Image (cartoon, rainbow, N blue to C red; front, side):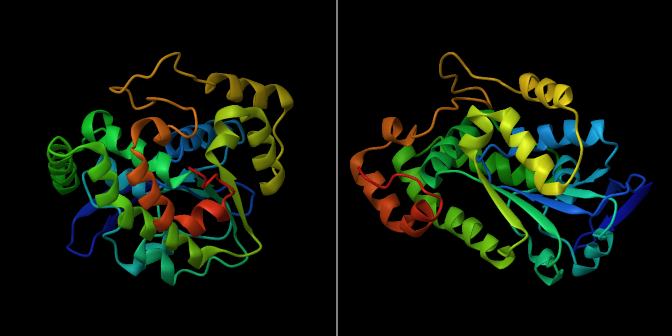
Length: 266
């Protein structure tokens, strides 16, 4: 079934809503450059095998050139408590803050914010896809701006933006939120998938788990700055940023770095 949604300024997007499965709905969140694309693809494969329909306002909006956060609260009507996986979120959008996420299982993928900022720089500069419409124009302008400054200045300029993204997730923290780190996906995909299946109380055969894990087990042999999968090893920021910039980021993100058990030593 196709449903038409409207933004605050009356832009239109079309979103596919599949036939509901016999499951309790769940939400899948991430942050930009946290392994979010990989997480989306793995969930797509899991849910394909289990005939669970996935719905993403964010991904649908992006593909159609519409700002993903620019929707009225009425859009929450599609978030029903039975039958679906809702995914593709890179932050908690303003319209979702009015939706009651209590008693709904939620998954959040995080990463060391310093590595996220470095990865975001290279992504915006070269590899990130540019859609049509207003959002495409915005990204093109960001790409132009990224060519004019060095990486240290860029990550410092974007640090508040990423702080706000992390903080947006404070609003959904409860006993039904489980958090995974980037490293959980990169270094042990099969165990990560098993953890997901267990948390959501789904049933996927071991053979299927291993097949999905193997399909997405991609490790670039060398760094490719023009690729969306540029480099997967943690602490890349130590190679790309000077000590002064790292110290500044450590101060800004100290609570987040410690909260998710990353190393704050220089």
